[in-house]
Length: 186
Image 1 (cartoon, rainbow, N blue to C red):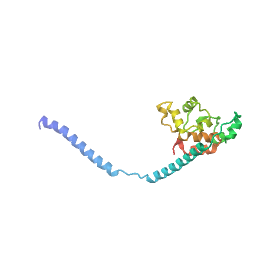
Image 2: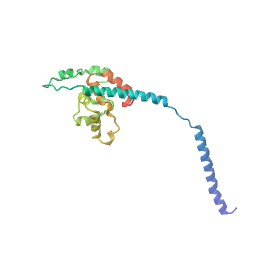
Image 3: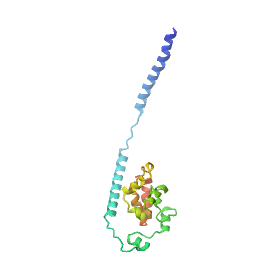
Image 4: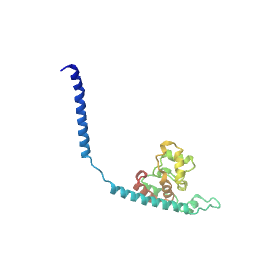
């Protein structure tokens, strides 16, 4: 054998072995691939999502359909709270439901709102559960947008509803809702 023929074989043999191994690996992997069928679970989750969406729309219709009366004079905080259907803040009931001390009008108890997002809402003049409960989802998104791109991943669709539960003192209902919607997801 001369030197030129040996040089060709040094290239040809590894190329042939690589091609054969590639084909065998492809067919072996293709033959052992399993298809996952999650159609039943997907249908169940879509059904649950549709029900929750309907509940949310019904809740939003109730809140927008209720006529709002402007008081003739500024009543005391306790009278205003009672007249709008909200219970006076009961710190012990909130602590019993959440298992930790809750401050009145702390927006961070709403699932998805942390200290920085709470600051964005405070900058817009939304500092109470009542104020947040009366804000539209579109306004919540505008507030998030003022914080920049990193806040666009948050979904404020349920924040007014959660704030309304807190404002009305429905602590057990709020905790139950948050447990069913881990991190705001269904």
